[in-house]
Image (tube, rainbow, N blue to C red; front, side):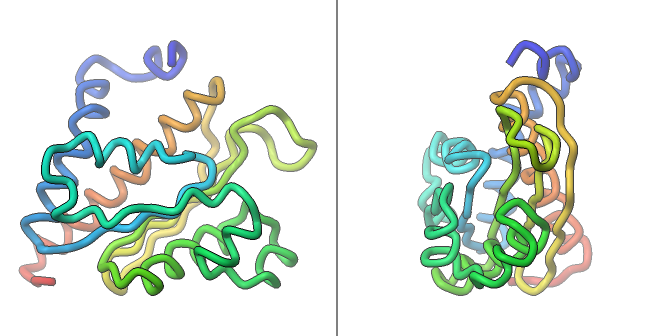
Length: 178
């Protein structure tokens, strides 16, 4: 994680470690549950939550869907979506997030897909698509991260947790509950 550490200040590095706790607190406060569908992050998001004592209050679990078969069977991605757009696309990330949210009855979901390396001849290494859903609001984004494989994974985890924190914080400011 050397290159990623060089990108972030010490304050931001502390935030990287504290961010899951902040998101956890918001989820508990708003009585929300979270499910994850991870491809590129391979369980890194799940690990960031399961390190927190009492995580089972809000974290239902996650699917690590590295294969297209699991994206279809477990995350409810339409096979035609993968065929038309590829497994690393905004469309697949969005369907993964919506699919696991629906399948497991959660309020909140996160999905990730991308290329962490080595180069496969398709999109550049570091191309990542994420999707975060809070109730009916969804943010799906394309990112271009840099560094080694672990750097790209950590940047992806940090990014989706920041997006989730943003959605939960804005929901809270609006005075709406669950």
